[in-house]
Length: 388
Image (tube, rainbow, N blue to C red; front, side, top):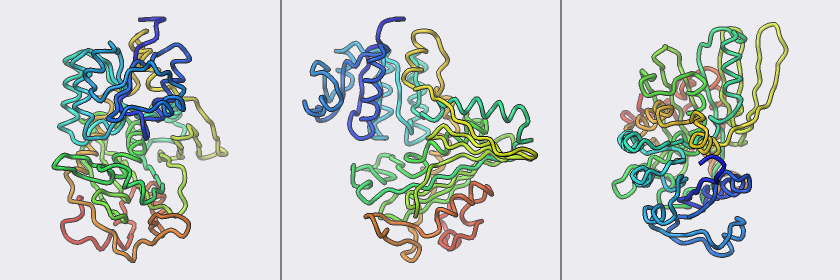
C-alpha cells in the first residue's frame, strides 16, 4: 500500500467526530488517506459536507458493515456512542478492516476483551484513540526519569479541573449515564472526558497492561442531576508498589489545563498533556520548561500498515485503563453531593463545587483521595456508596 492513500470510513462524523473528519481531511491533503465513506444514522447534509471541505462523492450509510463492504475501506475510524464500540469494532475486524477506536474503547472489561479477541483473530491493527499518548513528551519524560533527574519515582498524580454546562448532559441519550436500557455506558468524568488524564498517568508510570495493576480505589460523586459521576478520584497501586492518583471534576470554579505530575525523590515533572508542555523541577537546578510535537494516531496507524511502524496505542497498552473503567462500572452508584456542596455558576448554566479546584490539585500533589483530604462531602458518604 506504500504511496497509495489508504481508503478510510468514518463512523460518527458529528460532535467529536467532527474533529476526526477534519483530521482525515488534513491527512487526505497530505496524500496519506482517502475518505470513502461516512456512517451516520442521518446522512451529513450538503452544507455539513461543504463545511468540512468534503466532496459530494463520499458514500454515506447508516449500515456500517455494508458501507465497509461497498467502499472496500482498509481503515475505519469509530467515534460513536460508547456502547456501540464493540459491535462496530468486531464488524470491522471480521472484514479485515483496521481500526482507530475512540476512547474509551469499551464500557466494560467484557466488551474490551471482545474487541481485543476479534482483532487478534482477524490479525488486524487496532489503535485506541488516546491522542495524548502520541505526544513526543512521553519518551522525553521517560528519558528524564531514566537519567535520574528527579531521583527515584515515588508516585504519579493527575489533576483535571474542567467545566461542562447542563446542556452537555442533554446532548445525547447516553450522556451522563452509567447504563441505558440495560446496557453499560459508564460515561463518567474519569472514563470519558478526562480519560486522557488516567491513561497518560498510567503510561508515564509504566502501568499500562491489565496485569500491571494490583489494586484500585474509587470515590465517585456527582453535583449534576445525572446518574454517572462528574467529580471523582481513583487511586491505583501498581504491581511495583507505587501509587497513581487521578482526581477530576467537570464542576470547576476556574477551569484549567489538566496535567500529570510525576513525583520523584529529588524533584518532579509536570506534563500538561493537551499542550505537550513539560516542566522539570529538581534539586540544585532552576525550573526547565520544554514543548514537544505530537504524532497523530491515524497517521501512525497508516504508517504501521504501510511501513511497519509500531502502533503507539494498541489495545494491550490500555489494559490498565480498562481495569479502571471496570472498577468504576462495578462500584456502587456515584453519591450525589448534598445541595450545600455545590452552587450554580454566576456566568453560565452549570454547577460548580466550591473548593474543588484546590482539592483536585491537592489530590495530585499528595496522591490522596478526597476523603483523605477531608473534603466534607467525601467524609459524609452513606454506608455502601464509596467503592474503596
